[in-house]
Length: 134
Image 1: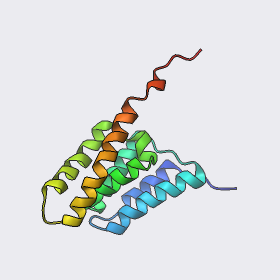
Image 2: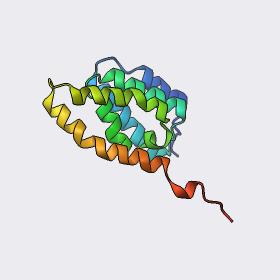
Image 3: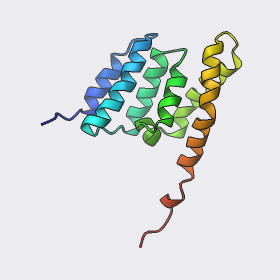
Image 4: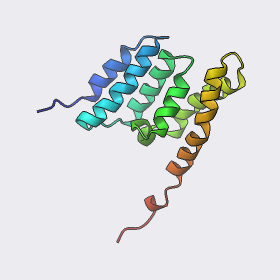
């Protein structure tokens, strides 16, 4: 029988992430996907906010891009991340687009932006959420 992953265990994993370590950000995202797939692990809103903060701290350059790419893959962040917690991600995204020092990252970021905005609009405007059930 599989052992369920507790939120406290995942929070400990987030606290172990080191600043400016790109591997730690990738590890957090991989763990989140695998826990969901294997143990039906569900993020709650505070845990999703902490997860995004740690990813941004662990990978200062590409943190926003990692979050946006995983958001569009409909990971746990898609369903639990509140719009207010996406503001720092969008601010870093805008800084990357305006900055000319990293052209490869700038191109990847520009390519991910339209799909991200479309997913945000679809997430907000799902008409069947407001439909009355019989």
